[in-house]
Image 1: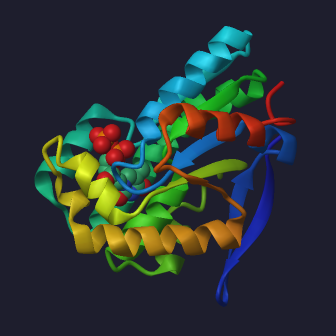
Image 2 (image 1 turned 90 degrees about the vertical axis):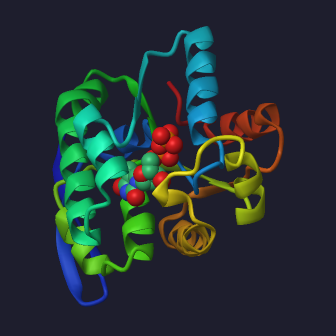
Length: 212
Ligand code: TYD
């Protein structure tokens, strides 16, 4: 059942619509800088869940095709960007994530509201502003931070065309911020320089008791 919880950022207290803790834990998100392997891990975990017969949906943020294209191609201001990511997230949550959780399914998400708390903050927006824009968002209860150095990320990303989100100094800021968030919100921090199979094993160990 949805209920309201409060989270605080400095002096600001904001109401966040949430679901109960056990339900929120079934909302699993992969976070990390670009190149960390979130997309691959979302796919590998999905395959494992399918193999085990666990009902799930897999989603990714940003969700809407138009929003994604606009964000990549137009380079809006940091505030406009944050608004679009937040709106895109609400559509995804109201149409897919909330209904899936209410049906008892597991949700595996490639990124979440924590991406905004990392990237839009690194872009210069205040934490208060980001929290306010996302005040209706659901927070995943299980978060894996796939952590790699920016050097390793750049090596991986060089194999594809870099987007404006993927500049080295920017990614350094984002990584530092993710590590802070991990401590504050209790993410599972996973060393993502390991092989995909090893990372998945680690994820599955930490999911013991979370999966139905
Ligand atoms: P990403 O998952 O890396 O997309 P792709 O699979 O196409 O590489 O996400 C696209 C970019 O959007 C990524 O660099 C991070 C950025 N982003 C934010 O800045 N804020 C957000 O809230 C989200 C969800 C993503």
